[in-house]
Length: 524
Image (cartoon, rainbow, N blue to C red; front, top):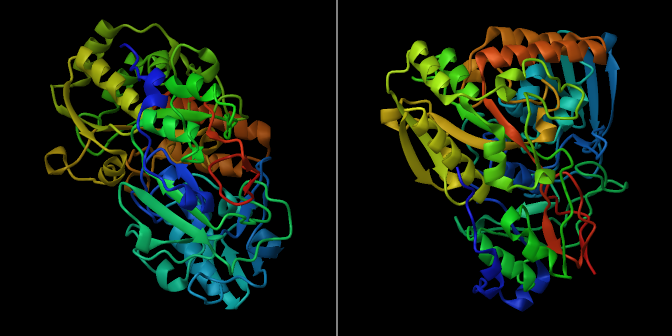
């Protein structure tokens, strides 16, 4: 399939959005990949929601650029009873945006809500007998068994952050999005200025008390130097490039590959890499309904996939910006291995796959593809899939929509004729596929897991074994077994790894790595 093209050379001549220069001088203007479809970071793993979550909510622990977990809202912790009791002590001066103090009971309720949804949180909560607040500053965990990774669970930053909110909000059902955004983070969400599909606004929270330490990703002192941040939703990538070159926006989260040569020509733009582990691209198949409730059909699709087709569609021919031969753990990390990789790297034979599909029992069932049109990379992915499925003789229903609608649709468990779906595609930060603890797509817990809802008791058994592994060597052995099992059960199909930069104006200083973070930034 040919790569989609954009009119890169015309970008600087296109009309940029009308942005008042006086107001732009006061606000940092950022263009995310997509709109903020859901604002509740517990309900969805959308990266826009995660980034929003870190602005509005603070966390008990943070994670630095070495992936070490450090105290954030807590002053520290102690353990008792051979590691089965943890006492976390909140630091002084923590305030919610509504003017109330952050209390231990707020934190306990927030952890309990988050732990029902997050993959690492579920592992923690499976070992919890009770989370309590014996006083206003102490959060107590009583565990069934020792769990040394408790701070790592509470402090891992992606895809689901454990944001602390008032208990009255944390008591909301974990599958029901919050309608009120009250956190204790460094920014306040300006709901009165929210324009769906156009703008999301935040202002500096004057009551925030940062730690007296240098900022390092989500750890350390979150000192805010900018009074206001505006996310501008601008689907037309050429217009975004023009606005960045002309200084009408400050930061473009993920510039498209086609426009990088244009941006590099500007002396006022820098293009650093925020995420050293890149993004792993995935195809998620809905296993609740035919045809992908059949593992043999899922395996057949996997045998048809050529990762380089997807990578070329998204990133172009420059192999320095992508990798294929990617398995179920992020490349070049401890859990990655070659176990079973012939399923993805062996010779591709579509005629053989057609026979494999027929033998598996595919009978022309409709396949609904959720096809976002407003993120060029994701649009390119689904177009490759649609082309592949059609060449395999599948009954493709290509449903075009924006990413915000995909985020809302993908949680639907109903059959296809009631608004359900068969396939959607997304990218995960490599850090979210480091190991089984954080790997939300490498689960087999059915409806207790993420959209797609795969069921695999063996994957769950191996995941539990990884947590019990005594050392890194043992963990690696379990991870190999997990990957082999994933090639049998196919909870999703890996499509490759992309490695692209971000782009922002040269006068922004102090931009942190890992993801779009808006503290520590100054102009100058």
